[in-house]
Image 1 (tube, helix red, strand yellow):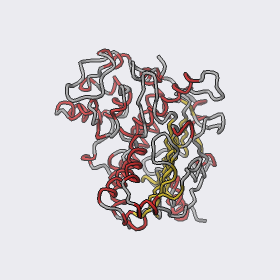
Image 2: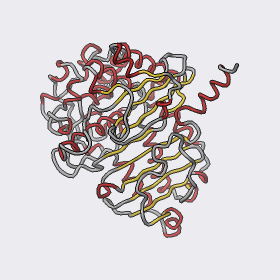
Image 3: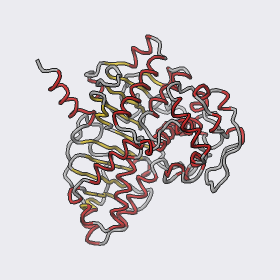
Image 4: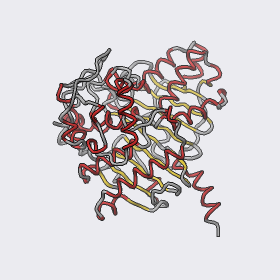
Length: 437
């Protein structure tokens, strides 16, 4: 069954990446107030039965043990509920792909109080586990020196428009795909994995709509590139990229050095028909921003709405170094409590794409910012399905969102660290300290 049909059953990509014993299913889902209905009893998972051998993530024994304990306490009933892991907009899903649920078991809760050093260590272990499954010719495709120019050469367009280096899911075995997902699970949250898998799956919808089109739409045409040698105390990085996804991660001296650029895009922004009708992967990013701008009074709107027409795309495009844009719009210090809560929701949403310990560190950083230096700007229509754009800018970060293409049903969303994209600021310090002649 094609990946686009997640609403009716297990997709090719997800099911192939899970052993048969998992795909066969188990006991019925926990009962409760669920707006996410299972696609059928044969797809139900029995979380308490999952172990390292069943799901193939060989480095995850300790997480699975914790997951089982949580199941026994009823905590992991949440993935089957409308408020799954507190993820807004989950009502738009018809079915949670099994791989997403399996990976959610691997993600430690914030109560575990992991440090970012632990996050870097687990990411290095997951990267090495992935690389260990590769044949020499595959490893040659997947690995590059840390200083390779391709590390900062990123894009979000189809691969025909931007030839990509790295190893694609097309060229991986089932086990290798499992380990690639495990690598993602070492740094992303359940929310981040959900978005990633759904964005990949939208390629099937585009393929089905135009099988003989200009671009080869394929949910498996996503690439992993590893830069440098992954180690628990070294400096290295990796990227996961394909159409409408580009996620870069950098480790410096065994610490998380950078999590940007981070690009998420959707086409269609909202699935308008078919078995997945209503799916809106980036619902929070769009709907919350619109609610914010609609809540403004006349004086606030005059400051926040900077243009009647939205730009054709994000302003910073796929620049290797994001330039600082003029801080247009309404400063957060001029918002009332309700409006600031909406702005905070937008800020926290992008943080919560990452594992809880990393997200919590980001929240602490945001809490220390000068509200007068955080600006929200909007351009275009306030109506859904009409072109619109917004950006949130502070001295050291930028969020851009644009939805103008395909009848304003095609979203581009990016997060940039204006000082430290690709971990460049920390890497520069590293080289100055350790590699001076």
